[in-house]
Length: 355
Image (cartoon, rainbow, N blue to C red; front, top):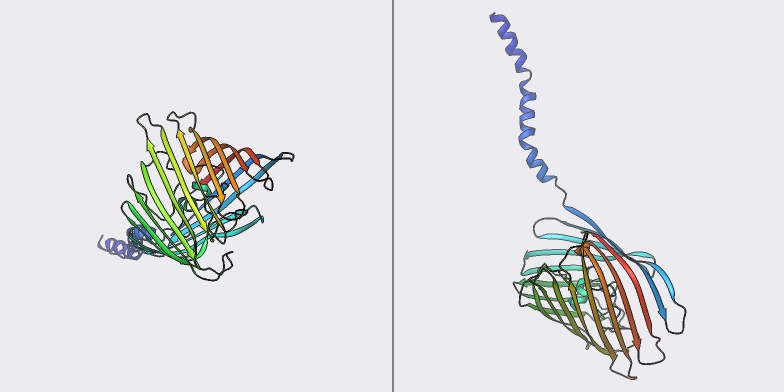
């Protein structure tokens, strides 16, 4: 009996290292899961449309377009340092280009430094881009985002920005030689924004929050290069009503004084627009319907009295805010000189995003 017990004990000892290893691996599993957790996120966005385009004295054209196709990549090195790398398809060149390539340092919401390629401090319309704009026909009015840029509003440079509860400020310096301005001087840019109701966090902005915030926001921005300036003032009011409907009003005034502006307006131009929308409260199927209207006037401030009037109407179906929406639109552009032909468009656009 004693001999059998000794043999069993010796046999058991051979398994002790294996049992200890299993116990150690089991207890370390949560730690291993934490240390191997991916630090990189990948997303994408798509805007595509069908449009009927009619220019005065010409036959109308039907066109299917791939307006934008983007890949979003972001990640963090530690709690203070992170990066963002985004690409976008250019329908003009049929190529994929670098949109954002940014190294980001964040000590707190009040102190952030970005360096690389990104949107400089500018008007709200530039800081929300086509995917977070409220209307479909963004950047067609001769006013929004007339600043000089390398690609899709972006410049190479460095900027500071900070959120001070309801006040947001940003300032930066950007490479002038890579901009189509004819000057190699550094471009300086600054913006200040006050949110009287709900605050907005982050550097990039939205054209609407579809009722997610009650906003009363006023922003002013300027860019300066070699004595020339581009100055904007923008306004956004958005309110969720007691019936769960959402009313939104957006406006901007822009003055391009030798810096930026739209083709055809010369070196000096100015303009303003007013946008209003109503998101119906009742959900029908997967989403809610929205009615939107916008009117803009842009004019040259030198030489001939060149003026562009732009009207746009949208009837949108909002499925999941900016991640899934179908937007039907009518856009009408009229000019006061015969050298520029009037034009109108009607179409339907689809936007999908994986953030």
